[in-house]
Amino acid sequence: MFPLKRSLLLCGRKKNIKKKPSGFPFKERDLSSDGSAGSTPLSSTKDMFTKEQKNRLLEIARQTIEEYLLSGKIKEFAEPDPVLLEEKGAFVTLHKHGELRGCIGNIIGRGPLYKTVRDMSIESATADPRFRPVTLNELKSIKIEISILSVPEREFKPENIIMGKHGVIVKKGFQSGVFLPQVASETGWSREEFLSNLCVHKAGLAPSAWKDKDTELYTFTAEVFAKE
Image 1 (tube, helix red, strand yellow):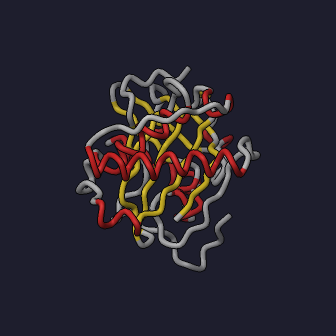
Image 2 (cartoon, helix red, strand yellow):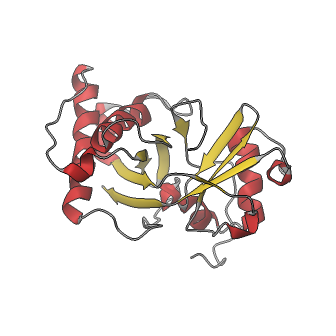
Image 3 (cartoon, helix red, strand yellow):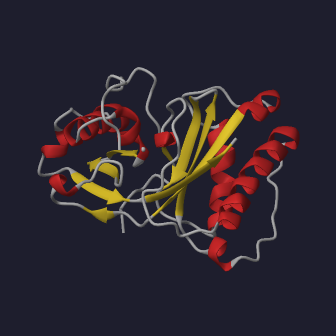
């Protein structure tokens, strides 16, 4: 299991991280899935969830944010679907007019998936330190994207990391950071650029820290889906 002490992680690229020129061949909210405008959400794994299950999770996310912004209360749901009761890591990403508006998640599942999505929806809307809290008036303009993660696995050979398929966690000492799989597709970065930007912008490490023997890399895949 990935030894991450912090329960919540931010995801998504900061606005000052540049993409490749538009002619660069793409294959990750949002990484379309990080925070780039107009990206189409991609699934990095074979679909594990039905259309109905995806819609249910997206419904839970939106209703949760709306209720929390209205009353400050966490909405309770009765969820009978056993798949949505499984423990899985998940990130909730918010976009507004194609720009990242918030993204927070758990790498490792802690409790039922639907509750993780519910709780991360509130965190993304109100607790991402990079943004002011989402307001009720702008909620109708918010696109919600959910990324359900596989269990991270230690990767000892960076050359095995596949851009657009693997999300990556970098960890060195007490510093760590994560990019969801979509980031590579949105930016057009090479593997080296991806890992260097991950070190610098997400973990506060030197660009080449991923090459150090005492740096740990973990990979995971994600099923990504979204709805306006």
